[in-house]
Length: 310
Image (cartoon, helix red, strand yellow):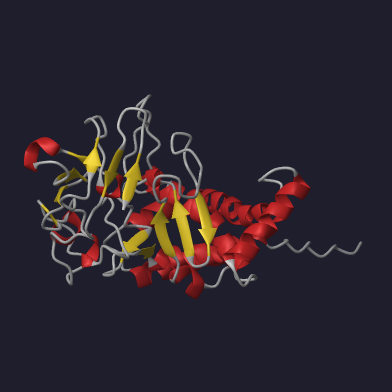
């Protein structure tokens, strides 16, 4: 159930699992509130109240639980052959939601259960950057912030951010879709296939996967979060906490690695490798391994040349 109240439009909206309004169990005072199931904008003029929603890339009919047009990832890119091209949330709406189809496929992959995880090249890179084992990174769910007040509480207008818990990283919603701030129409958008979006995803995730390693040291999320609170109080700020400084090493290492690959292998070589759909993941990982080894070698202290005897 979703309950929303604004100054102008108090309303209570009850849905079935696929988002259809339940007859006799919903009410609204006025018509100013434009959003419905999953926080998506309704287009009530086409098929009636709450029956037709704009998901950015496609329009969705809540009554039949299907999109009106096929999924471009399935039709154009031949991905997910096990799914219908018109399905919603992998046909599992209780445990999954459908986003906008604009996630950077170079970094994320959507499983048949509708959940997002890192691609294998991203798993290899994130593990190397953060020191977190590959299996933990591979099994981590990547999710958008839940509406309306869910964590993380960073502003998408200011660029957004992410928050890590046990086997889960939640990103602000601008990492999954073209987000425009209501008042200013400003855009802080990292959900596309462009170079900039892929780079931002990899950079931030290099930080967040470091928190996955830290989280494994605690039995519960509560214990992990309380340890953060103690460090914040001691350090005086978020960035001064020991765990943040430790996780930041992964993001800093990513920035340095990008500079290294740019200088040695050509501008934008790392992102280009991730984006190249002609190269299989195994070959990408092999190339990444060679670049990582070269980077690590470059960081070793150079031995001084033996002094010549007079």
